[in-house]
Length: 297
Image (cartoon, rainbow, N blue to C red; front, side):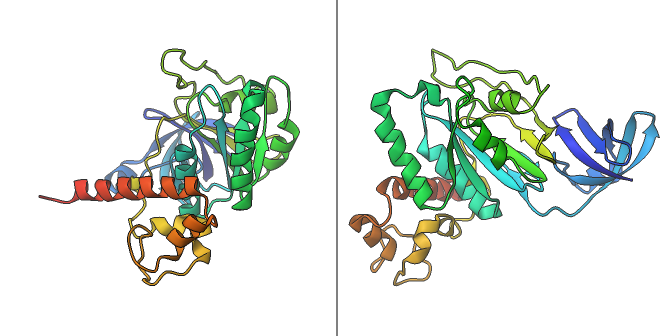
């Protein structure tokens, strides 16, 4: 029998059975555990009943992709949710998530949420970032649960077999889903006044039935992106799409200090946004340090 993993936490797996239109508890078989096979929300699995409301998971079907952060398999689209305030916007986190999506070839839409908190004096700065990412080919939406602005456009963007909402803690992912999915009733948390960071309202990956068809994933927030753990140093330059149109003297150019670097020349001439190049340098250094730490003494 075929099942679809709709919830995954450290202690619990829930499986949707399409043929029976119900959710049951899933228990991985010992063989899977011995093989080191991990199970993720979004996985299609082969199961058999061992109790009226419990199935043994005997095999995991081949995945078309697997996002590591948040950990979801077979993703059709990633909606990266950010806020301008509460918590403050971080282009470093956004660019890390965009690089992840480029690596795993998952289509992306950027969502600036909590637009009701944007002050008039901040509007030009936000407009700068929106225009920057739109020039790179990423669709950008502006939403507010408080005013309802942008929710129709977001609903239209949530079309596909499996849509994932991801972003830092406190940006309002659960609030958006509560507004768009009748009966979702997801727990929400306020941003800490002391730290300016969001608290984790969601503690597990859970897939919800999408009114547009398919499923939508509510995922735990985070404070940093673990990009260096899954991307090789030589791969990172290829994950910034604006770099691809420029030719360098060396095929393995890291775009840092090599002579004849077309990317650095483009940054100096304004063809590539300086802000993007700076986050690239950050992730390049972080990846290099991560790899050095993994090397045996």
